[in-house]
Image (cartoon, rainbow, N blue to C red; front, side):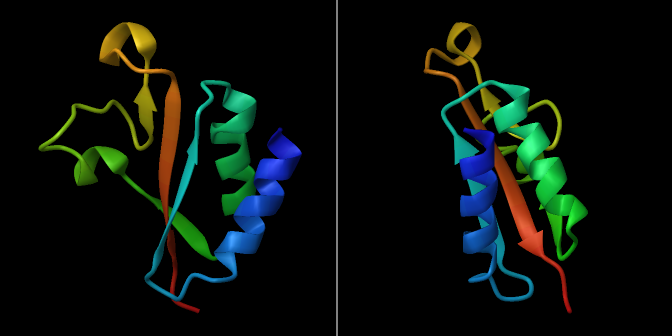
Amino acid sequence: HAAEQRALLGRAARLVKPGGRLIYATCSLLRDENEAVVERFLADGGFRVVSAAKILAKLLPIDGPFLRLWPHRHGTDGFFGAVLERTPA
């Protein structure tokens, strides 16, 4: 579903003001639907990644800039999340 996810992310991005944040989340653990979609989106410019680890540090230990929930570690289904912030024009 990566193509559909890229299209949705692009449409949502148009609604974010400078300094505003867009949360990209999936119920997938596949790189093609997560990091690859975010990397391609960021290559278009205008957004940067905000570390989910810094935002959620008091609630949940996270390795790296993205939220990943694993069934065997967190007792949930698999989830991915990225915090994307629109940069000033």
